[in-house]
Length: 260
Image (tube, rainbow, N blue to C red):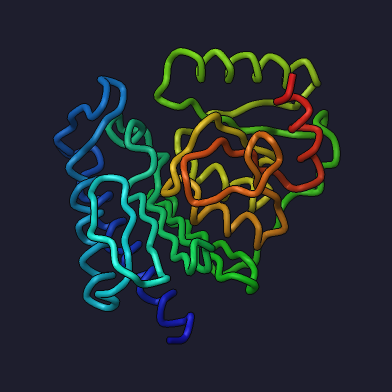
């Protein structure tokens, strides 16, 4: 089947999820906790994933789905859809309009389509493998910053409030010691990766992310000319992993800081 057919369904699914986001935002999303009181889940997460899964299964019933909120029966298909129905739930639950829907299609564990949609700004980031990355149909590319001292960075905090949190806080200190322009913590890893892809930031790191957090954004970043690895500089797989993403120019400099 043509890649355009897969892309069409990915866009349709993202649009359906975004409509659910907008309907529930600031309107009783029925918030509850998951694994801890600071790991939130809303009705919008659940309904958005249901809508995405329904659209995918109607078109491609043999494809796998890997979602954040539900488990799906595995098939023998080489195709897997990796879905975060609402990336930035804690922002969403507090009325902070920084969140997204992230949908990737992988073939043999390699992302070939990536969609990240921010419904509050009507910003659609998309990429098809080997066809470039786009924001609302305008081609995007990473920044040209060559030094950490020229760079604006983004980070994220995993739900682990012990070792991972201390490590991240130490890293923040070390990056500021290198004279970076500034640091942001936005709360949606999918958008963080897209912001690096579009040159709004120069680098991003997070101690631990799940595949649904980075699958779509990683393809968008690479297609925009960026680089993404784990904290040891290795290629990332669709498994839980540390993530370092950059414009490519400052990647080794960021690795050096993370190795202190």
